[in-house]
Amino acid sequence: MPVYDYECEDCGTFETVRRISERDEPAACPQCHAVAPRVTVGAPSFGKSGGAADTDDAGSGIYGMTHRGGCMCCR
Image (cartoon, rainbow, N blue to C red):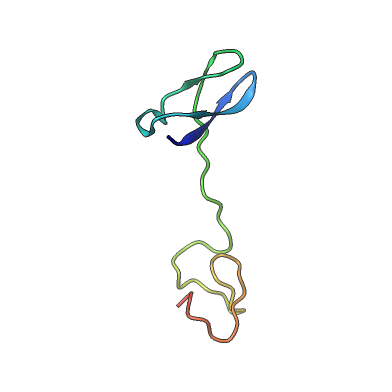
């Protein structure tokens, strides 16, 4: 079963193993047993937003990487 992160207001973050169907339900904190919501983390955004065709004049792709020699990854 997968491991999910939860955050107790008093004790901080903790991990627990749960079924996928239970992942969004609050979990009991292992220290104080208070009900804690799941921590959801969004993916970081690097460089410009948009599609794979977004590049600037310096040849930097959407992930902030510099490309050399006419690479095809951002075309």
